[in-house]
Amino acid sequence: MIKNYSFFFLLRQLTYVKLLRVLLLIAVANTMLLPAAAYAQEDQKDVIETKFDTWRQNNLHEKIFVHTDKGNYVTGEICWFKIYNVDAYFHTPINIGKVAYVEILDKDNKAVLQAKIAMDSTGGDGSFYIPPTIVSGNYKLRAYTNWMKNYGTDYFFEKKLVIINVQKIQPENGVAQKALYEISFFPEGGNLVNGIKSKVGFKFVNQFGKGIYGEGILVNEKGDTIANFHPLKFGIGSFTFTPLAGSVYKAIVKLSGGGQQTKELPVAYNNGYVMHLENTGKGQIKITVQTTDKNNTSNAAIYLFVHTRNVVKAVMSSNLEYGEAVFFVDDSKPGEGISHFTIFNDNKRPVCERLVFKRPVKSLQIKAGTDEPLYGLRKKVNINVSSVTEQGKPVAANMSMAVYRVDSFTTIDEQYINNYLLLDADLSGPVESSDYYFKENNDTATAAMDNLMLTQGWRRFKWDDILSNKKSTFQFLPEINGHIISGKITALKPATPVKDVQAYLSVPGIKAQFQTAGADENGKVKFEMKDFYIDGGEIIVQTNNEVDSLYRIDIEQPFFKSYAKSNLSDVDFYKQNEALLKMYIASQVQNTFLYSKLNQS
Image 1 (tube, rainbow, N blue to C red):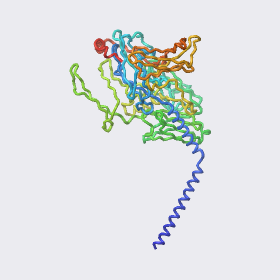
Image 2 (image 1 turned 135 degrees about the vertical axis):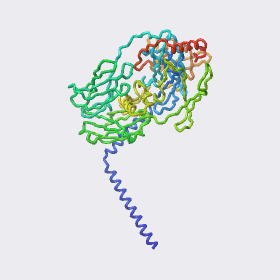
Image 3 (image 1 turned 45 degrees about the vertical axis):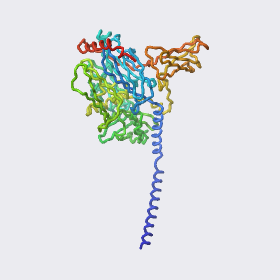
């Protein structure tokens, strides 16, 4: 019986093996029958992702945040600041540029104060003495590194400062400015397409970028009212409508500041793509893509590419069926902050793009407390600061703290590093009251953030450059070891650049330095100066006089001469009051008794 049982057991095992072989053959046959288009879609997805990753690896981006001790100053005071320099993708400290350029600009983008600040792995710190020659006004503090110059001024850190000259409170050009308004419309995904329902974001702002309220109606060429709309927050809102072929649409807006403006909507195309995003409430983001060209795009491939600060989060493909395709993305995939959702057609061309914001979950808990509830005059104050995770576990943190009087003139600064890195730094132009979007967590704030994403979007790159494998070129080098002093050598007669000429730079003083550099084909010379600090001194640059003295050397200005569009208004009229008087007296006392200690390198 045992032998017979073993025989039948073996027979059954052999049967299983044959069955398994049959199933494998069926699986292989089914795989062979899969349409070639499925493999092509996977290849296209890989091509887009590979080219994007290649571009990202060759393009390093920085972000700078500057924490000033306050936002309002009187002349004679010192503006103290701390610089944080991080990787733009992961928001971790980056130790590449050793020098930060910090400027205070007036509303005409004229620099009134400039400084070069040394940085290390933790950032850098410095100060500006506000001289009594500065007139009352709104000013802009901006900061950047030499490497950041390659990507334009939109990436520089900017912050508004108010400076009041107590001797002359009224600004020199204190003439009331005429109010100007700008009305803009932004179709979701990029374009309006006739016959497809679209969501349209809009923005009402004055010439200083401040949102204003207004009531608007959308009318067609016959004067029929198609939609009514008004802003939800900060002059920003949205509405939906379906454009029709042959119709022209314009918006008539009555602004709260007075007057009425008429603005035509962007032209709607007969053919194209429209995308729409919505949160299903079930842990997924639904992306619907529609096109009117149903015949030519039937079963055509379409791709969704999602990245957060240039880190790929999802790449998906689908087919258009009757002019529509739907994607579902798990809402845990996009990172915190702003993510880009881009749609590509079957030719790998970007046809739609949309921004989505994800609220940060992880946060550092910082607590501060004093040793006494009340203090007498000039009594020492001890402040204990601790940093812990949400679970209460102590964690190291790089921080800065400002101490100042809160009165009718000096208000609490609401520009925080977390808000700036996750929101402001990744959008073009200023964001009004960015702290609102982080503090409030309700339906209104969620809708307001979605409207903001509709109306402000940009990229740190051009898709055409990525898909064509265009090689990145950089005019400005990162100052890895310290200051790079650039210059140009020209002959006196004729006044043309010369090459292969050796130049010498020396720094006289207690800590003397000496560097040499050769001119390139354009006459350019660059001296890399490690640990170079100079305050009111000089540098000497020359060629070899024994060989030829008929050369001219010009040192280039290290501060960037391009500027973002200024949106500073004239300073509000400040009346002489007790708060200003106290600040002015305090600054005079400090300048009289402590100037030599406070105003030093």
